[in-house]
Amino acid sequence: MKCLLLHGFRQNESIFRGRSGALRSILKKYATSFEYLQGPVPLESENGGQETYGWYFRSPSEDERSNVDESAELVMNYVKEHDIEMVVGFSQGATLGLGLLHRMLRSAELPALKVVIMFSPYFPSSAAVAEGHPDFLSEMMADRDAGPTDRPMPRVMLVGGTGDQVVPVAGFQLIEEILGARGVEATTFMHEGGHFMPTNKDAKAQYIQFLGEQTK
Image 1 (cartoon, rainbow, N blue to C red):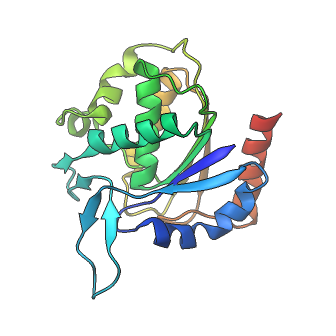
Image 2 (image 1 turned 90 degrees about the horizontal axis):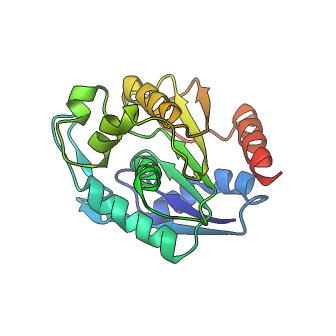
């Protein structure tokens, strides 16, 4: 499977390539190639370091967010044009994995896409927060009572940390509820750490089991 990896906030393609090396070593049995896409939102460098990027802006209070739909459209077009079969996203990149699923639930056709793995995806912590902005996150919340889809969907894995202080736990739980209500098959793996992509023995076993079921 052709695999696309999407970085998190204040990273770039190079940084994420380095930080995802251990994960790639696990996925290489299932992925034929790895591609990286860089976020479109430039951020100020810290302490004279290299330029970093994000996919969208979100205030810590969740009162403001912007560029969510624009980045989701960018990723969807890349997946479609490059026949991507697996998408792996971290943090903001994982949120864009949700964007792909939402567009497929509504109308978009991405026949090549088979697997979406999301590490620490952000989702608004309540319906009120979600619905306060005109983007796909608010649309996902609005569509949660639409019932199970009859459209073919990729298999999904959600990975989160019980100690994550960056994305709200309540939002993670809402993702599970919404995908379940829409009939999207999702496997959830919760680890005891924070905001990162675990690759220890237990995590590796979870990924291999999930991907092994996909390739049967």
